[in-house]
Length: 397
Image (cartoon, rainbow, N blue to C red; front, side):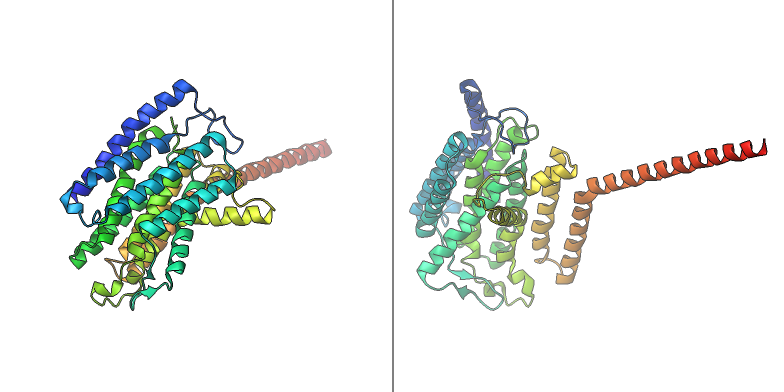
């Protein structure tokens, strides 16, 4: 565990130092795109944070190659090289998009290329876990297609929610920390250190470190954004780490546990962590297609925009996302330790609390409106009473 923390810390320090340098460079050269209609920030802000995060990822993954305890993850060095090449490519495309606003078809093509590199040279989904043993995906072609589609889906889901300060960085830290905990628990329970455990653990630790290092400059009010470069990179690495375990592990090795839900944790946890980004992605695509638009056309109707429209502050909306992410990610882990009904009850309670917090501004408006209406009606009654009293007094005279 100490070595994983050290690698994450290296990624964080390099990212933070590079973020400071990148921010200074961007401000000195005026590299900050103008504020768009859908943006929620008021002044032009550099979007080159992804470059600094990539530097932290490269430094940490390179350092990991010299740690003997990580040898399982680096047993096939070409996979790490391919991962860095795919990541560097998608970061480059992301930077160009942030600066030049590339056509959506070009961006999608670049995402397919990066995901294809991962599927061909790094890892692919070969089976889907289930309580009774892994189910083979089928042909190698089907495995590649499923892997590419999954990675592209995750990249866009993460990119779609990158609209508020510290939103992607914070939710990634929370979700990836939960995923790392799951990997650690399972690998310790098996008493093994297979390559897919080690690879997923190293990548996840590096992603957490890069997000931690970038968070100080991205916290509200943000001095710099990670941009498409950072969001797509986080999505790519997160998906790769999830596939390294989800598509490889056979859960029958867990000792024949009779619980059904824990057996699905490898599938549920990555999607639970990305529940809100995936929901936002699906809703956005459906909304745009129904309106006759490109599925990648930008608008101001994402979930985080709706939270702001409901009355949440910028920071409040981000914390709402954090709370939902904590409930779904930690909730999945509870199935490894608690009875299924107890874990489900705790998750339900967490959902209820999050729902109340989410609806709080609306509830306040309804409450205030009801109070104003009650005051108006009371004033009307008093006015009618005064008029009636005057009429009665006149009649007596």
